[in-house]
Amino acid sequence: MNFKDKVYKICWSIPRGKVATYGQIAKLAGKPKAARAVGYFMRINPDAPDTPCHRVVASDGSLTGYSGAGGIKKKRQMLIKEGVKFKGVKVALNNSQYIQKNIW
DNA sequence: AAAATGACGGTGT
DNA sequence: TACACCGCCATTT
Image (tube, rainbow, N blue to C red):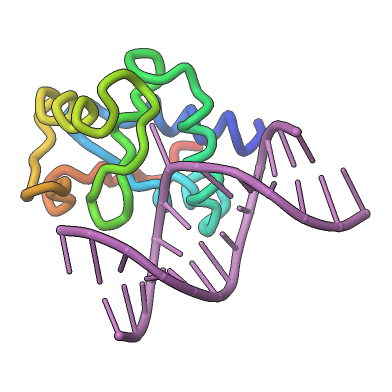
């Protein structure tokens, strides 16, 4: 299992209505400081409905990137529609962050 | 092998 | 909130 597959697998494990941060995913994948690389994988993946990459946000809760149609705006709407709480322009990590324990 | 790239993260202004 | 910097990383060129 390479780093890339782990990242995707973790993405798929994020439940509806919850979100995870890039750094969090990087850590779960075994590379605490590879958040940047995680973003890279999100960018090249088939996007939207396929991999729920829209459930991945920046550490401060703000939405970054998203190469799918609609961009950031669309991403935010998708999250809201799934039940993710928002605090202004950012995600309310306090009650919408996905707290996951080791899945391996 | 070396340099460039980007959907990051943390800190400071 | 916005922007600039710098350190980090896997993947591509």
